[in-house]
Image (tube, rainbow, N blue to C red; front, side):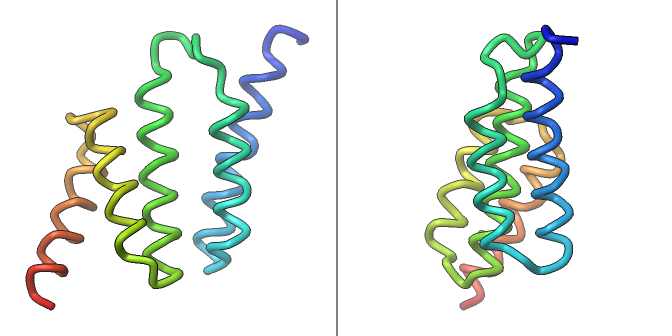
Length: 103
């Protein structure tokens, strides 16, 4: 339906980005994640921050795959700030900070 179109489009970009990231295509994933971010409606059933945290987490992982750790860490921190209860964001942050500390 016309009302659902923007939600469906945003989710489509997110799913495609996740798929590209899984295939190791980080640059393509980043382009799709930018589109997902722009397409996600602000009034996403009260879940806008959680969705943006999910997008930020994937952006972080994409930058890490591209060996851009500083940028990846910045987006991981943003994901955690947007959704401090997210187990995925917490785990990713712990892995990044323990890896950085070990280097």
